Image 1 (cartoon, rainbow over the protein chains, first blue to last red):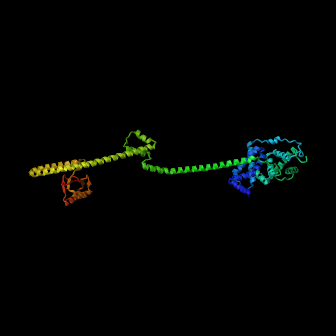
Image 2 (spheres, chains in turn cyan, red):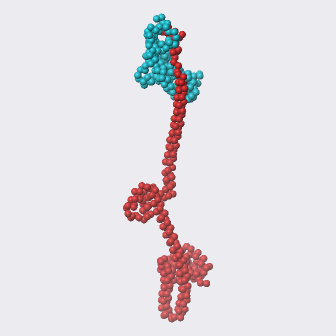
Image 3 (cartoon, rainbow over the protein chains, first blue to last red):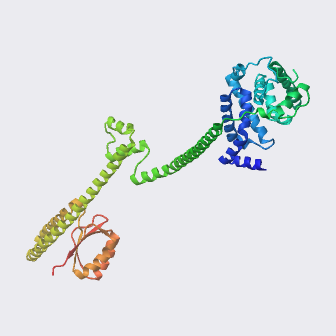
Length: 182
Length: 287
């Protein structure tokens, strides 16, 4: 109910309501933008653009889906447009710099943050399609239905793509030596 | 914990729960929120300004349309009224024709008329026509005034002359009657002839006074002040040639005679009536 009220206020161009809405979703927008574009500055620009798009087109939101799904879809489309504009494959500087020794074992990783960084960089090495679906499903925790709505795919396609993306991530993690029992 | 679980399940190819990697979520920079809000406020004000501009422009356009519409409706009526007031004529042919008529220069040099016809500036045409009209009016009024003054002066001089002549005539008639009594019958005939001549001369003399008015007095009427009112009432329907001279048809004259005889008013014939109209002159009896 609160979310619906917030949306109604946003439709009436209430700036305070928009501020509240952005405080809820700006992290999620930035997160998806960051993993899709692999660049913090680009993610920042895209997040701002997405928020302005939400402000301008909130009247068009019919309420047939969740507001989060609608926002993720806008974010994903904006990121795709951004990538098309750049055309060139954006290299992830931090990922390229990050070279993992094959003998780097889990046992040697003391800090949890280091595991986080390794997984993060393995995700960033995935293809665009696999990366996006891993972000939406495993990081953002969206349902198959929501992902199918955001990406405009059938639920079956979403499921199979998630499986393939996880396989690709497992391979990347194996390359890094982060495999339990190895 | 979730990360380890995720890695374990991934190794075992087990069904994974959604959102196990939530720890990998990136957090937006602190200043991003403020930047978003600033951009949104700018957009908001821009949107408002655009909306206001749009409203203003539509209002302005509507006002212009209304003004143009009202003017297009009002202007023909205004021009018509103005043309009626000033006598301004729109049609150039009519205008040039009027100018020619007013000036009386129908056969004027073609260059002049061509100028007035080919002149695009309608205001000069308008001024010319109005000036001509006023000039003509002034001339006609001047003529009328001069004619009226001449007429009144002539009447006054005629009255004075008539009074003088009447006096002279009275004295000459008296002398003539005395002479007539003393002379013989033969001479009477002669004298009659002479008398006729004298009368004719007299009549010619009186008629010569009015020769410029192309009528001859046939009868003279001698009346006093009391009789004057009656006579003037009788003569009211007849044509008045001057203050004291009237023109009557034969029938009217017969009626007039009856009226005059009834009141025993003296009427003296000067000339025979040769035309249909009889001219009578009113003279006041000497006290």
